[in-house]
Image (cartoon, rainbow, N blue to C red; front, side, top):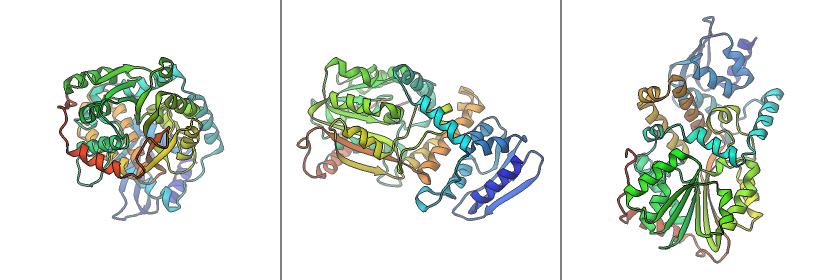
Length: 425
């Protein structure tokens, strides 16, 4: 019965592009039709339970089957398989996936509601789950200079990943309207790339906070190597503890961290940010976002990748920020930039698959490749994008027009900076 249901599901889901399936009993089936614009994929299933697992929860079931070697890709790769399924039902072309079963929807919503509370203790555990798996993996995958684990910025298609990540940092810095000597708070500082860039290029003082011990140690080392130890401070801290210190900042920047806050904590996050900003302060929030309305985090992502995480819709992000009189002074939607970034990360993981397998095991490699493949498909054909939202507390804090951004961005990309560290160090 599961085999028949899976066949019916694929008949409906794959019309463009080709998918050949070999079942555990050696029966074969083909779906769709060859099209040069869509992947041509062949898979085989090694046991009779795989169709059932996929039907119960397509994303989690397919992921766990692939991770365990129970579903293997014989022609193409896992990126192509996920792309094929997503491209046949694009979010922005009227396509729609079948509604999940009532049981699956109920289980997913209950699980999501329980995990997304994300208190201080849970937030640190969740951060460690993803970021404390070892810096060596991220060195292999990310850009060499800045180690940016967030969406790059691609003003030109022929840029390298390193160039696109530098362009992202300049793009964000331009929206902060920085002046020398200002104090900047970097919430979710990662391995210090943003803080080091701002100190090196704008001569500002930056305090970066993270919940990852692995990130903290490498960020400190990289700041010292960059010659900005006098301008940059990193610490292990939860953003919720900072307002109690009474310290206020000229600028706040947060890149790729808001996705980990959890929906129940949105109000707390923006209340803290408002109380940490000076009266004429400016904040730049860079986050993955939903192009549609609010949703839930899928079971695979919750279980294996980002426990406690949630991708926010623009509507709920703004609704939370407006409660604390934060003016959304500029909003930019980056539609395909993350897809290009993720494909670069995926390619680097493939190039280093033997090293990653040696560092962890084959199951981890397969999980990681599935994660990157699913994320890429979500940005290429699903409902995901990136938002850059500039906030200010006073309507007088920024120039009347956006011209200052382009001028600052151009200057940042051409001016020399203190020597920056190499991620291999």
